[in-house]
Length: 239
Image (tube, rainbow, N blue to C red):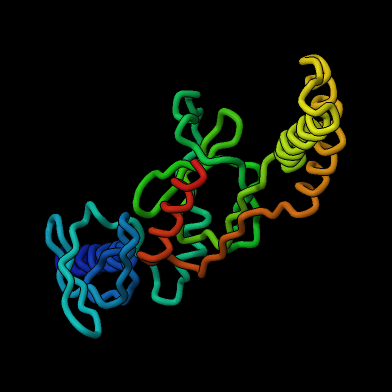
């Protein structure tokens, strides 16, 4: 009789442990969930089969056979993937200077969680992530959480000044040439061109400051092919 009671208690304990483990298994059979892959693809459905290297996800439309090695997240259906992706920056690493030759100009990144990454450089990483660099540090950031990128107009006064200076030098050269009927000395052309370039340069610099605009790009939340393609294109444009 004692043996029967002992075996019954042992069976109940094993059943309880098995049930507890099955509830904590994120890929347990019958679970309704959202599966997100490393390439950004996501699908929602019920896990109807599980093999050693694959799960079968039954969606409203079809069955998907998903390799375990490709799964990045297994979430409850109500969880917003963009919130998870923003927090999942994966790592912060020391970055070698050699990589910086492929970076964009400085920009600000506005994320889904309302945070902002200021004065950073960008490098394409994968189809769903980019490298964000500041100083000698880098962070892997998911494209899903990006809502706005602002590329800054670098040194608008300086660009305007040089353009204005060239115009001013040309105008001064033509003026002294006409007034002297082409008979002026070489040093006169040089001096008047140099002096004339200064006020034109200052005016050009001020105009550059007034009318300069940052390049602003807006995105919807989440990850989709058009967003990935556009971000890659603008990174290449500003590299």
